[in-house]
Image (cartoon, rainbow, N blue to C red):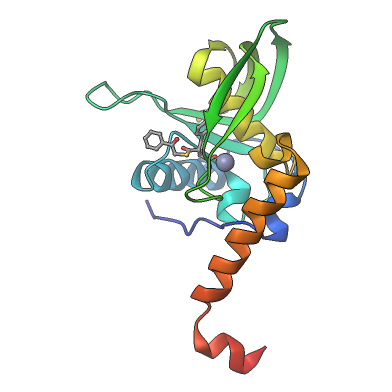
Length: 178
Ligand code: K1U
Ligand code: ZN
């Protein structure tokens, strides 16, 4: 398994609609395994393939708390088949928007259908943080970031700060070749 670099915003790859996978074969399984290791290492509770530069409909999630047994979920081509009328609000973070947080309102409970690590079709009902996290990761597959659920003012403020941080981090060599 390998740790993959996580892309931070602003980056055009985070704004693309991802393509479905044909099947969960060895290549996709390896991607899922590398993404899970990358997510645990970050640390995070979810990760979507575009965050590691792969524009495919693959996500991994594990919302188990510290001291709890790991509960990894691997999902390819996830689709919501039901959402609750009731909403819930959660202060979300994102590994692609480091050090920024914001309240997002989403359906409180969902049913999601997906292909698992073994290419089996599964359906899962989720609520609470798991439902929030799955919806956040599915948004990534549509090129949507949690800041896109916020006002333009808040979104632009966060993106401007991230752009400034990115420019400040740029290695000198990249200026020479630009
Ligand atoms: O998509 C991502 O960038 C991962 C993101 C998922 C997420 C967090 C909160 C609400 C919805 C979706 C993260 O994992 S941010 C880091 C984080 O939440 C966390 C990190 C360590 C321990 C517990 C949580
Ligand atoms: Zn995210």
